[in-house]
Length: 308
Image 1 (cartoon, rainbow, N blue to C red):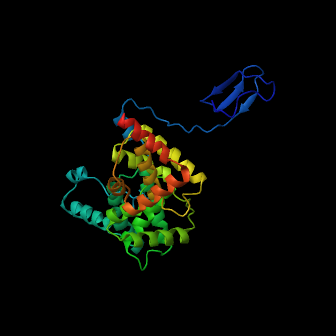
Image 2: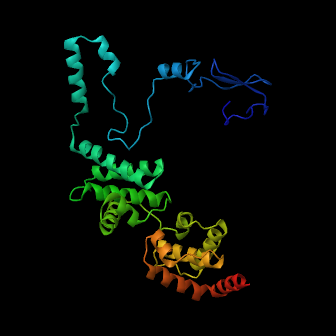
Image 3: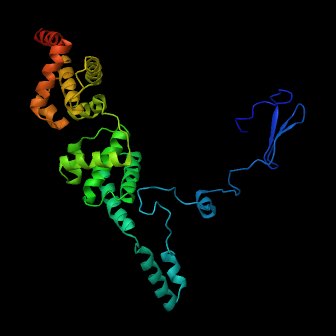
């Protein structure tokens, strides 16, 4: 029974009857017809197994921007139908299929190539389907607005993927996008800023805490170290140490400090390689955290415990 109807408006009774065949809701106490001519959105057939359900179902897959025709295209026949056709009809069948696969407009041709590249980069970066769908939508809008003209298809694909990652809080760096797409980091960043500005996409700054889980997993650090690094980042944000700094650098430095506190020593080189930043960046952020948050005493306590 629909959740909107909970009691009778006439007598206030809660004993209601829902007649599915007539599409009516009736109060058992006073007999008032509360709703009538209700639309039944359920299927009108019965199915006893999955195969029978597939045969009777009249709807296809949902729309998706990851296909150039948004998944609304149809195919001319199946290969099994060839057995029923004669020579002339068979030639006609192949001719129709050939014309179907030919794409008419320039936008569709661009989308067919670009979305294949988008799927490849998304698979390489192990991105979820939601990010892939969002990036495909951003790229489709960019093509329709003519933003791809004068730019390489790969750079716009990388920019759309980076924008989708930022919108869905899936941490991926520009270096990772550059490596996966084969486009220079500066070009990916430039295209990303251009596309988001022209399409009016608002994206919040990256949160350094989003990178902690990935970096800690790559460095094989414990859950306690991860929790402590997030606490350090929260203190750093209150002290305004994160503003104007790269999120990956400050996240890596917080994880490095936390690892030292918990006695899980990792070299600055190891942390820098995982985060995709330089050792100088780690060293600078590390010094800032120690000086401003007074963390040096905690590191010294860990060293004393080890000596004992």
